[in-house]
Image (cartoon, rainbow, N blue to C red):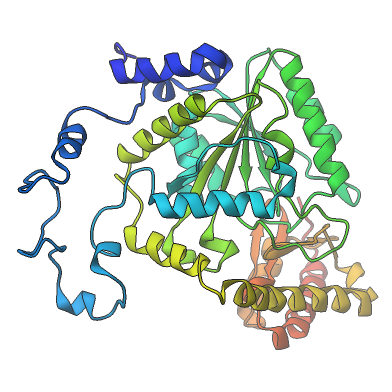
Length: 439
């Protein structure tokens, strides 16, 4: 890379004073990125509050409010300032503060642990991509379960050309933590980028408290061996847990203060948690042992710089609506109502599987306890053959990936669940009769 901009050098030096290991985690892009405090942004800040301000990069009415079309404004019952102007690249300050408070309230294990202020991303995919920008160099290794969200390939392998290393997701009825330990021990000492996605997409599995503790131990061992660990905690479906004995907190609580060579990066947002998929509001939050406000500030600045150089900023209107919703007296009640809708479907699936032992002849469910999805592993039939039969003869759609069938009960009406599983059973038996076996 060419000579670093002095502003990037300043941020790196702030981090290096107390946490030089974080600089080891950065990609070349991550070392070089900064949030510009000079140039246009600095000059615009200098002019703020002046009688005449000809620095602002939007258009204003003569009364100083945002220039706007009535046919747009008439459809949105909010203040124009909360709709039309740009939001900061860091995200709206009020929303960032609200979300930080919510992280602590949802994760009581974080009490007494300092974390960064969340930076707003354009939802989870963008947040993961920004992490790729900051931490992933070509040839780096990205560790994930072998049942993973397919977009990881586009984000990390296609875009940043890093190697996806997978390990078997399950060992019996739980996560295969031994396999995670084994793959992390392979290869030379260096950087380990680890995905921790729970509830997992596609399986709908969330860790037990014991499993979360075991993963923490494994990552601490990895750090003690001299590696630097970037733990990307994909909390897209956070909070949607339907069984007792399953961890209700993010593993971010375990890792945010676990070791000074483990950087915990929490990626979450309104998309799935608050059923606002098209709003594209997500957050990137950091935690590392013995951090300081200055280190977190530098990490936030680099993150905001990467966002500014990527999409400029996330939508203001989405952030405004979401923040107002979080401060609504009806928010908690309405969220619980929607959770109950999903929980009812989950419980119905457990009941269906229990009442139909014959289904085990055709498929077995993989462990699931949370989220939007569950997966079925066929006994003999080829899953793609099953999918085609379901489409063509049963007017039913499912997803096939990584050799398993993914069922989205999140989008299946409650009255259709019994028919859905019967259709899958019939199609799977039919596919098995065709003599096609799973590869």
